[in-house]
Amino acid sequence: MARTISYREAINEALTQEMERDESVIVMGEDNAGGAGDDAWGGVVGVTKGLFHKFPGRVLDTPISESAFVGAAIGAATRGQRPVAELVFIDFMGVCFDQIFNQAAKFRYMFGGNARTPVVIRTMYGAGLRAAAQHSQCLYPIFTHIPGLKVVVPSNPYEAKGLLIQAIRDDDPVIFCEHKALYDTSGDVPEDSYAIPFGEANVVRDGGDVTIVAIGRMVAVAEEAAKELAASEIEAEIIDPRTTSPLDTETILESVGNTGRLVVVDEASPRCNLATDISALVAKEGFGSLRAPIEMVTPPHTPVPFSDALEDLYIPDAQKVLNAAKAVVEYRR
Image 1 (cartoon, one colour):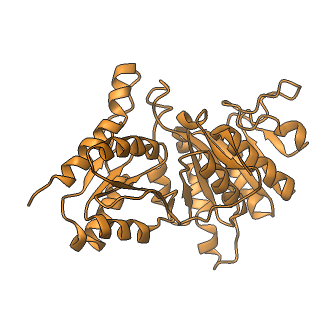
Image 2: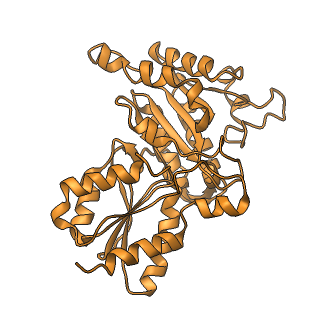
Image 3: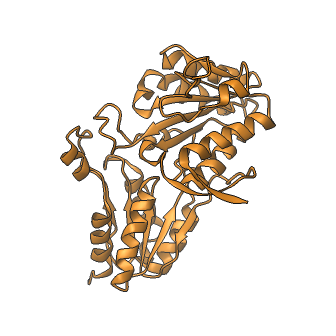
């Protein structure tokens, strides 16, 4: 039975259900409890609220040292635990990146497939909350670049719960990226436990005129643009990859094969992001289907501004997606 809950509540419910199901699941990070008394508020944005008292000894507040607790989580994963570590802001990955890309990501390969590292690293990303240049970046393309890591970017509460459950059950290291502007958004989410397989994109909206591939929060932006396009009798098909590694290339190529046009919407910086990667994929594997040049809707190649007005201009919006879709639909050779 589904009911409407927030993105924040969906993640909390996934953690709760997996901790009830499997005693090896532990949660750790800075302020994951947020105080040990009745006022334990569950992290910076309250995602883990209620878990501290429900699971004694399994919700661990750590020192403010990402290298220490991420390294500890990776080590615990090799010894039979299933840790969910919270790297509060994705911007802080530089402090612990060696443990992630040189250790966790390589263990299965280095030990001939005999090593398992079932660790999930939850992290916040994205602009829009006036958090400035050091707390607003979209760095999931960097993790996507690393072989051995699985990277998840859920776009709504339903996706967040099902993908996090799958991440916790997965035997490989998973980077689970939560857009901070989505926590208060709501949607229908089943009460029962369910897992969404990695590498299977979601066709959010059917359409035959243009394919729009959107990542994370940008899915909702693409949906807003698609409604406006429909008023102009342009039907957009929206693809939510869900995971950037593995990436469901088959669904993307099949959609472009039907529409002949592609727009990719990505909040990450434009150089070497998912928009460039998906565009290159389609240019190589689906070039014969294209009826127009590929359009990419991304921010400019600058740090995220702190100014309200500049940050609003920085983030891709529905109007920019609308303009890009109309450009490819109206293109004439």
